[in-house]
Length: 238
Image (cartoon, rainbow, N blue to C red; front, top):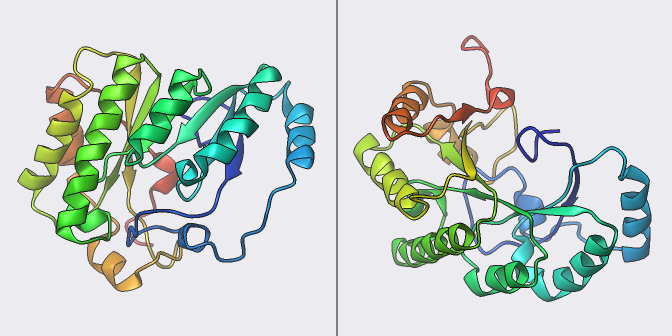
């Protein structure tokens, strides 16, 4: 009940990812630790049993589009059941996303606006900026095809707010004039609540406080009313 805002989902996690986000708490899945081949018949059987209860099949990971060819065949069978499909992607694999959208296999997209990307992607600055450019192209694609969008903003602390807000503004400019989206603020959390990929990084940059208020007010001034993910909040005296 939390993977798509305001909706109930049957959620499937797929292994592998092309990013190394230091705060990631699914990093074992992303690095293919303990992964195995899925029994598609069993999956479809389980999905059928939940049909009266769900709004979407939500595909997440990891980065599902690394397996887009296999996913394409699976989603074809899912759509035959009359199930809407939500895809959670980091937005850096534009061509696979375009392929699935063009074949009407995607009804909803959730993606993270990671700002600043050179720090949150966990890769070199050069690679991160190249992938950021691809992320912006994915926003163009989603907007062009009028796909309902859940834009999630992971909120760190101790980064220059001017830089953080600049990337947020750049991303919003790529969905300008498109109204079928909403923004979720996800404060980054770390030890002891979750086990992130990089505990030391999270000790420095997780559990934001004033950053949430600054970003929220900035978005409201831009005409966007964000939703704070309350499930990721903890008491200040935790």
